[in-house]
Length: 87
Image (cartoon, rainbow, N blue to C red):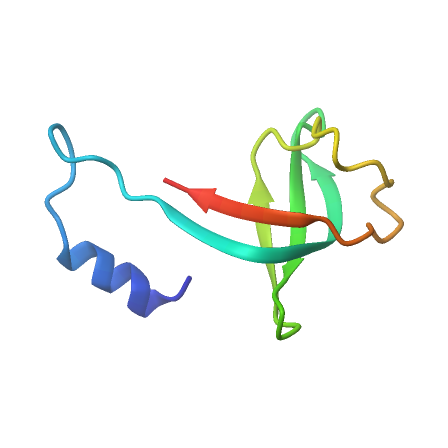
């Protein structure tokens, strides 16, 4: 995500009733690390990496209970194919 993308999306308005929400997705990402966050650790701050080794930190809302994440927050996770989507 960049400020330019946000500005481009704003130009595509109107949003709201009768207009479906936009969905953003990134595919072919690997999860590098995941750290529980939130009052009860229910969310994850995840570092994802693409095929060109570019990394970004994202929040995975309610992701702490995911069965695919078995490592602790202090050790690196094995590569797990992931799709991050927001709408």
